[in-house]
Image 1 (cartoon, rainbow, N blue to C red):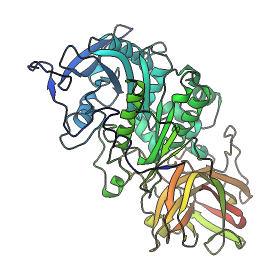
Image 2 (spheres, helix red, strand yellow; image 1 turned 30 degrees about the horizontal axis):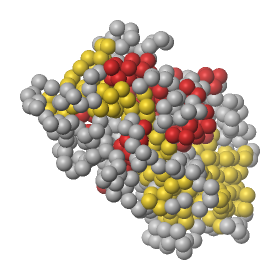
Image 3 (cartoon, one colour; image 1 turned 90 degrees about the vertical axis):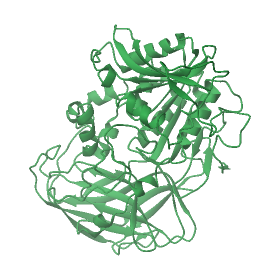
Image 4 (cartoon, rainbow, N blue to C red; image 1 turned 180 degrees about the vertical axis):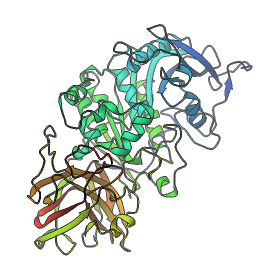
Length: 556
């Protein structure tokens, strides 16, 4: 492992794309293109692209004005409006976008069928989905006179998942893909971490795509078995650079997908897959969807302001679309921890040098490596006044995104707070974390929610990641068994995200335990119902503390 102290695209004037500060000239297709001497000048052209069922899909093309120029092409497929994408990534006069300002590529940005300019296209069906459209569009691009026949795909969130749907159909011209902040398949734990539905996530999906199918399967039944295997990594025959954010809601699913690709994709491309991970929330790259508000000052701390995602994407495309030998990199994993300046590389994730460290929850509020005192802590849990979600792995714009101060959570009577002593050397959290303890509740069901925090010298808790467990629905989440009130239950809470976070000297590691975390997770009504629909009862949650109540974290 070694540190990379500079951006991947800097300091390489003779290798990789020319994405210098000289902007690419962009003109509309009906403008006079003149007689350009090179491929610098580009045309914007609105097109309708035919696909296999006879539909026409709306797109714009950015291509060389010089008809003699043939370039590799990057395809973006979006449900959020191609014009919105153009406004941010091509027309924004102040934003730097190294990939989309590159002179070495053409671009096609497409409205999904049923959305925006493609709203008149027939809806998706059992035989025609977004992946089939992607397959046809990749072929269309490869046949255009301004294309050199090599196509890559790029995109975030929904624009990410459609890349997997396209890739598994193996379009011949698809040579590389950069799926950012998503995972290949829908999974139970993506939707129901710890057996509890992610309520604000469902609110977002319901607004755009409908959420009924997910709510119809609150246990891990055969539908989930089918959904989790719907797309097969073995059908992927193009190298992929999977991008994950430590504070993104798809963090674990994206990293799991990367591991599945390395182990199970077409053998010819397994060595080409890469993982890029950094201190980003879901909106860190900008322009993912419409209707989002401006990011706050706190959220901008975890925004990709230096466009590292695009810089690494450009380098990945240079290696696989342009065949530049100096553009690739050997180590499979490139990552940067929160609160660290340097990029690091590793052959695997988590890195081979991580170890698991344990702290016990003591009755005096300490996280102790030894000597934790035994006792209980009882917390009130009111479904009509739940512990509020403050930041984290959120999607809806009504909630903060990423690491956020937990002042309101800590101040409530329904929170049990535990902290280590101040660390004297950097404590590098690197990988996964979980909490194991015994709990009981006065009703027939309950939840245990935990938040892992960084505590500054003034005692302020900043969220790193969180997790929850429904007591009636333990792993493997296929059978709900209602509780006997007050009967002790062994609980394991897996925190939802992989983390790379450095607790700096003088700071402390913190853990907040509550009976809810709404609206990131649904409220437990405590009456045996799978969801909170307005009816519920209050409960008391009792935690058994001492050496057997343990926080386990992977560290370096």
